[in-house]
Image (cartoon, rainbow, N blue to C red; front, side):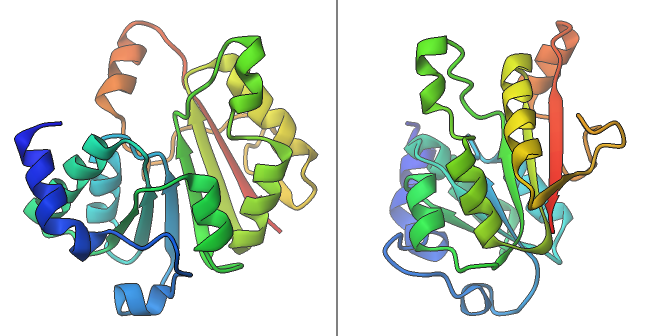
Length: 208
């Protein structure tokens, strides 16, 4: 953890971070009623900060368990004057279960989750039928779930599970993968992968 990240955690936690023991009242948190997008696992926060800055009409909740990443995002929010982001430093499933009100989200982003590529570790992947069911409970009708991964086998796994969930509809014209939408910024990691010829798969499903 850098000195700047530690300073941000020490001085900005109360301004941007949420209590994982409380149910969110988004109107109270953001001082308005508007679309709320949840991002699970925001990493160092650069993409989330950029998305929020470019979409001031929407509010964003970020979840991350890597504390230096939280500190990095806190510093970015304060430096850039971004007011439409709040953060949970906690397990994503518990936040979804305990803190997010039913049908309260307009969208859920899951960008480049750990693929747990070894077969014996597949059970640790976050995208499972129970997770998809939980997401469906938290999305408004017409809300969307957007996952992106650079592991093709994981993309196939996610596609299979989402396709089996009757409450979701694939937004891909070919019923598989979508082009990257403008609201998802290219990360430095992704740009490097693309230069090396690595693929990236975006999956966007809407809730009925």
